[in-house]
Image 1 (cartoon, rainbow, N blue to C red):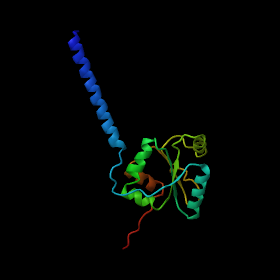
Image 2: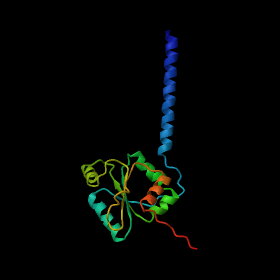
Image 3: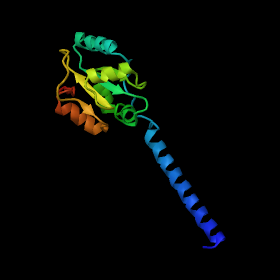
Image 4: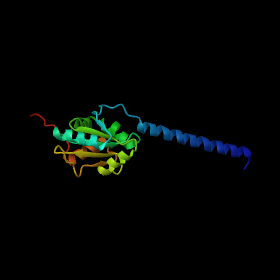
Length: 169
């Protein structure tokens, strides 16, 4: 192959690779940039220890509230998708506003974080647990992995966690 042709081929491949990289970065950026939400997610109480989690769960039980525990890390993309897409959905936000919302921050990968994960039987992130007003964990309602708003609402309904608003007639 002639040197000029080899240079043209190499330059073409380089341009194609740069274009593919730019496209990948643009799509990744779109997936992680929060959309302008039509609603804001209700705030979560952030904890990073078993003791703090136990205290928040006790508070939820004392107030006869369902507790949502979101095991989260700031480096976890599906965790961010919950925060940016699912929890900001108006119907989901309305349901969450009736729950005691706890975010367990596991971002630092500390030994205590791993111990908490073992204690709570969390194998990966994101994991969401629901605790009933009687202080017991809902045995079958755990969510592991991302759910879009509609699937999240279906999950709440299937597990008896969806607060039904009664219409006046």
